[in-house]
Image (cartoon, rainbow, N blue to C red; front, side):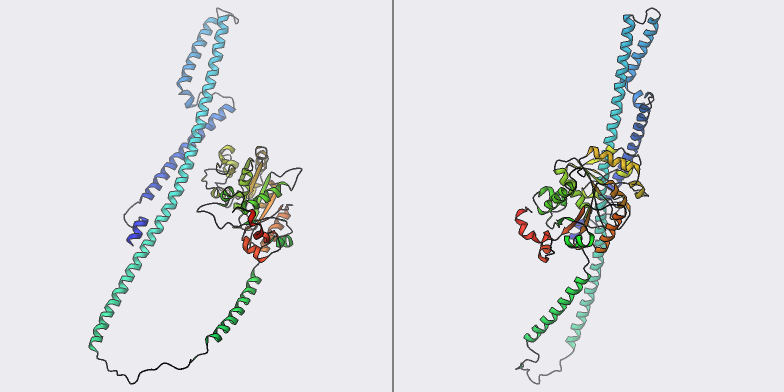
Length: 498
């Protein structure tokens, strides 16, 4: 128990722990930083409104307090006074009057330049504050995780203490009982005598081992056969491209292997970058090329990934596809359209302070909510806030205009949407894309759920470009021989660098 206390640093102090103190300090810093951000946003919004309406910015505190502007205004006042005095003596074309007008024009340009510099400073301060808030939120998440760990350790320590006390009480009871029994044995005298010695038997009293072995083999074989039949009857998961074509009428673009040898905390998209010649990378490459060549005249730019139910590898596949496109020297944008359960930024390991919902509510600009991931090279538009009606947001004119404007800025756009069988959002989101990719998890996705999802897309006039079978156990798939390209995985392994 002492080792547990030393390892987890619990049970040694009373009151607020260091983690809780740090959590309190970070919350306080976050409140202050958000207040500063709101103040700077309001100030910058006022400056932009005044400038867009053509009104003077002299009422802004940063402008009026600038020493340079004050000095320039004084010079301007002096020139106006001198111009008024000389206007009665000279004509408009007099060299002195022309010089005065030129000086006034120069002063106005300097004032405008200084005002623009002040506005740029406000914008930079706003960006710095936003970055600081994101950093504090990231630290806050880590400290919260540590605090939960500390609380769990405290609970476990209390459980250990209760177990130790119970064991100690039980041991003392057994010890007392042992002492009483030993004292009684010392008092009682034995009254037993040996009549005759026992002899070993000359022949076995039970059947031989061979009979038991044969019976066990027969029974085991029968039970195994029965279990195999039962499992086969209840296995309704999709396991091959042939099943997909027969049941759903969709072409299988690729079988994406399950990655069992990832390093600690390594994500599949990171494995794709580290192993560009692996079977996983080859599967993503074939999907990318299949979509690209599906329409030679007008190459698809906006691709949506969806699935029937959660936990089918949809988001992991979308991030990997976007990463592969970015590594192919494309300007790529990954948009999270799963408004109920967003996970793109978590998959990339980011903590964000704003996203699509804030932009659609005019609370953030597009530049503030689109982030650039330096590790993969792609840009992504996450979801941070919640909305009461996700379907209306996806079906809005502003959303359609956003996708159309992003088409001009990016070479490739990947949309990660919600599961089709869970919510209706994806039926609307699919109308924004050029192609729809339908993800199914090997051995897990039920045929009924997949059929309902494809039918839901057909109701809005969408036919998926193809199906993607995710998290495939390639060795088992090849061993069972499902009749598709996956059964040749063993022979093709020498072409991969896994």
